[in-house]
Length: 531
View 1 (cartoon, rainbow, N blue to C red):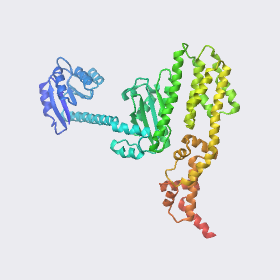
View 2 (spheres, rainbow, N blue to C red):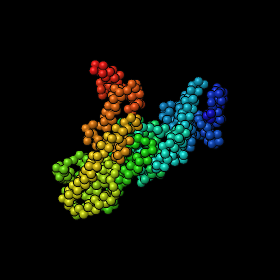
View 3 (tube, rainbow, N blue to C red):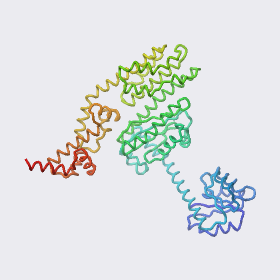
View 4 (cartoon, rainbow, N blue to C red):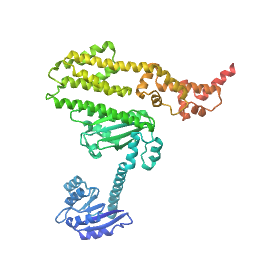
């Protein structure tokens, strides 16, 4: 029941107000009343009402001043102003203060009850939200989520606690993202929500919407780390949600000189047990971003000159060439790409070292994102950084960039050579497990120890069809065989070839063969009778 307190210097109004409502029947407790604000303040401290109703014109302290005091001292208290002397300016000030409702005297019992019920519902909603927020930060939930990220609990243990903690954690796909704000001084969720992430209002709003979405679970792992477990029933939905963090990541990287926020994005996982691996990938992503930031800070601390934006090179263009460029275009690309570095005096300026170091770090980060199996990346990075320290001319900078590209391609080539045989391994795995409804690109990628995105690209490149197309082809071929050789019903065959939904199986079958399973079987029988 909500406690109500009235402040009004009209004694007749006080008595009428107290008598016109059956307070207990309506779910309220009438805590008391006072004639002026000065008497009210100690009584408020004593009764702690949920709803304060006050007039405006009163001796000593007026109702607006009282409301302002109460809002500062008791922010959860709801305030309703009822006055016969209100004007537009009073109403405007009341809204600025945060008064919940503004009513004009005289007011009837029905109208008053309507206002009280509305405010009471708001109190209930805010209390429910506060309870959920407190529950989210409670030790059992925090420990469970932290242990899940650390790999200390099994999927079964998480699911057992899922219902009691109202986590709603079970989904088809997962991606973990990490927000590291160690050096920014933001240590509260409220401050994080209002910080200038991305510098674009639309992007901040998308972030806030995602934060409130049922598809995300967020918890604060430490004073500096916020973790999001992003869930999705389809990869398309998951990618849409993750894109918000990719955009935030890009926006914060653009503001490297003012923003020290690092957003790490993990790999897609299709098992709850493997959320731990997505977390490790996200933390590694943060690690490479911090290296780039530290490189920038070191330059600023040791170099009094200002970076000329005309010589800053596009990391994106370089990474794109690493991914799709060819050997015969490498020299011309590097010469054009690094043309602005000619303006640097390599004998006196350290700007060139910063630029090359930053590109190198980004190249390593991109490689790890694509392949996730580079052995001892820190050692390889340090070797390239030692090479950077010996550069004293534009020509040497060009030579370095070409060596970096060649090294990247060498790793990529070894990767392709290694995985040519794995295409056969993937096909054999699919042929042996197509009847399982759990088989997916993520499962097979885990089996051959590749990232799902890279396996998808590699499989398409080597076979000329997507992984899903190949899996569907194997399943439909087996279904045709069973339709011809057995009397099993269509829904039974659907289960036998890995489809839990017979209707979906029938649609896929018709799309591939041009016939429904029943039509295909009947046609086969007709052909047999003709022989």
